[in-house]
Image (cartoon, rainbow, N blue to C red; front, side, top):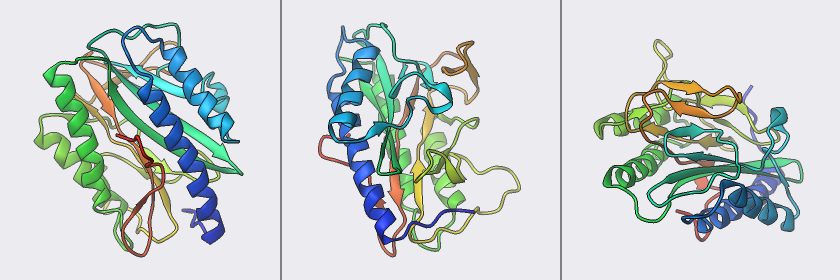
Length: 254
């Protein structure tokens, strides 16, 4: 069953998501050549904690950090470490915060200094995919209309969508119903109907090459199988009676 948040729960979601957005913006602002992904994790963790929240990812299925920091052809779930970012890299930061029992979830891909034209275009297309999907995140719409819009824009721009991992509902739990894939599964119809009070983590994961991915032996880090670049963009979206609300969008977001 897809959870529908009441007025009080939506206010709690807004608070959790604001903290999530602040953490993502702070970690993104810290991205620079010579910085380690562990430092980005520390920045996000500090913002979450000084705002009275806890990192939603830390300890989730034994995950050891507050953020995912996925570099270049790492798609998602990259483990923060002493890895030093270099000029020309791109890094996808995914972060969640839990506040008063509710969770926000957001991600974006950031340039490390000057990057290639291909990398810049991939980041731009991935962000565009999110907003193409967002146009369908409306009362009485269908989940797979969001999915179709994301996939169509990616493919029109010569990119592919990751099919092994999806967006999802979010609220009291990090992963709730419904799944929000970035493509329309075969013979699946149009998906669940959207209703006010639903909160969705819509998150295009877009590859410059093929859609196939592999998981490293660490059990977390997901790579593109062809080792071409990947980018990620995500906000927690509230379905309303009118325009969808981006709960994790704060000043300083990209």
